[in-house]
Image 1: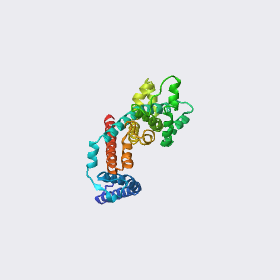
Image 2: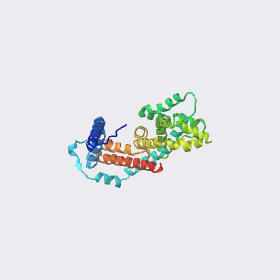
Image 3: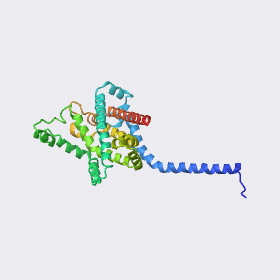
Image 4: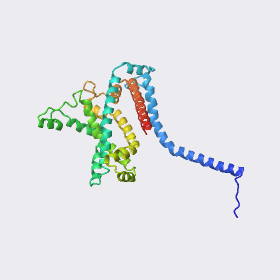
Length: 311
């Protein structure tokens, strides 16, 4: 015969204290493990952001001591809104980002599925070759693409001449310069985004595709009903990373076009560098940099909100 025991208030109180102690110990362990990373983030992220905002409220040249910094308040931000340079750079950046997204996301999804689903030899080599464009330094790639875009001796111009056509002035024409930089960016980054797509595809159970095939679904139906919905998180991450990388583009602009011709490739990152290091207007450059941070936060929030509503 089994005798049942009832929990007394004292027993319940002791159990509660033990559970509370375990919770406190977990919180302490979590704080202990996260504190080094939070310290690094604070030193290398939060402090520079705060310093940039502080400088944006002052009139200061980077070629003078900090003691000559003078308070302007929101004057630098008012100058940005009153001038044309900031809006030109913002417009070029927005066009650049949109072109990158329109080309990169569908191409990365297509290449990812092509390099994941078919059972063929050489897929690993193809993935390595595609990813190699991402690991090569951007400056070296920009120099090579500058030679490719050369109007007289470049391979692209020679290919046009071989068929009796005149090659466009890729980097010296305001109508094609920004598009030429987009092509460079897509070529450099597509391997990285494709690897992310492949990583997302590995998380989809193969049983779902088998069930879809049993129900008579072909490749396109499986893609629309299984692959793309279950890749939503991966796609969201790729979109965010692509936006951030495109907004921060600097190396090809600095090496290939210097913001020209006719300011057609002056993006925000290059305008910030030019204001700070060429014109010495650190306050205005900091105002643009902090505005760029706000744009990044707003765009990232909008993308996450849209994806959350859609799912």
